[in-house]
Length: 382
Ligand code: COS
Image 1: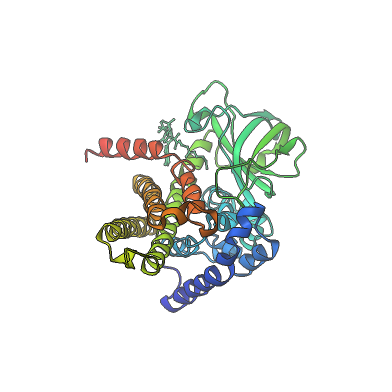
Image 2: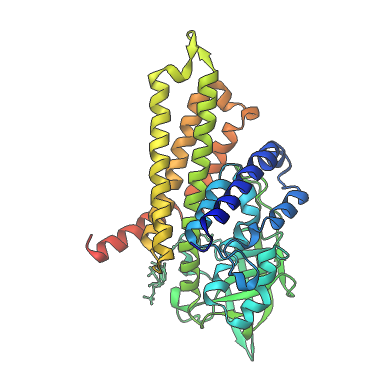
C-alpha cells in the first residue's frame, strides 16, 4: 500500500459519494447523449482520477495496484463509460510510458497525463490484428533519426479525445511476428494522423472507439518506447496490468447490480409477498453474491502479488476472465429478477446487460485469457 489506511479510506469514501451523488443520476443522460458532460470530467480531474497510477514524482497519486483496484471497484458501481473517460490515462494509455519510458519521455508527458490535461490512447488493434495482436501491419520505416508510420488502427478507445497515442508498429518487415514490432509515442497533431468518427456500439455509450489512420506520420526516434523490436512485450505488459484493473471494474459493477436486485426484490411483491422471500429468487442473489466475492478475492490477491513485484500475467488473465464472465452472469440474473422491468430502458438494468458484454471481448477476449492461462499452467506443470 502506498497510502496510510485513513487516507485510503477517505479517498474511497469520497469516491463512493461522488459515484452515488454525482455520477449515478447522470447514467441515463450519458447513455442518451453518448457523451459525458464536460463539468463531470473536470470534477474527475480535480479528484485525481486521471493520475491514479502515475508516480507521485510526476504529479499522480502513485497508488499501488491493490489501491487502484479498490478505486476501480468503487467506480465500477456506475456506468462503465465514466471510468473509461480516465481509464486510458490510468491504464493502457500511460503504463507503457511508466514501465518503459526514458526519464525525458516521462518528464515530458506524465505530468500532463496525471492531471488529465491530455488524454491518452493505446493503438494496438488493427482490422487484421485483433486477438492475433502480433500480426500488426502498421509499418514504421526508419528514415534518418525519424520513423515514418503508415497503417490503420481500429476500435481505439478515447481516440477522438486523445492528444497522445502509444502506437504499436512493425519496424522489421522480415519479422512477421512479435519480434518485429516496436512501440511509439505519437502526438495527435502529427501530420498525417487522422481519427475517424466514434463507432455506434451495443453499449457503453459515452465511451468512444474510433479508427486511427497513419499516412506518412513522421515520429522522432526519441519517441520510441523501449528498444526496437520490444513493442509487443510493451503491449503485453501494459495489457497484463489493464486486465487486472478491468477485473476490478467488473466486480464493482456486479456489486452494484446485486444491490439493485436486493432493493428491487425486497420492494416488489407477487403472490402477496416480496419476491425476495422466494427461494428461487434468493438462489439467484446467492449465486451472484458468491461469484462477486470470488472475483473480488482473486482480483485483490492478484493485485497484492503484483505489488510484491511479480508480473502475475497468468493471474491477471484469470482475474479478467473470471470477473468478466461473472458480471455477464450477474447482469443476466439481474434482468431475470427485475422481470419485465429488467427489459425496459427506464430501469437501467438492460443498459448494464449490454454494457458488460464488452468486458468479455476487449483487452483480450475470454478465449485469449484461456490461452494465456493454459499456456502458463502447462509450462509450469500445474
Ligand atoms: N509479458 C511479457 N512478455 C510477453 C507477455 C507478457 N505478458 N506475453 C507474451 N510475451 C512475449 C513472449 O515471451 C514472447 O517473447 P519471445 O519472442 O522473446 O519468446 C513474445 O512476447 C511473443 O509471445 P507469444 O509467442 O506468446 O505471442 P502470440 O503471438 O502467441 O500471442 C497472445 C500471445 C495471444 C496472448 C497475445 O497476442 C494477446 O494477448 N492477444 C490479445 C490482444 C489483446 O488483448 N487485444 C486487446 C486490444 S488492446 S485494448
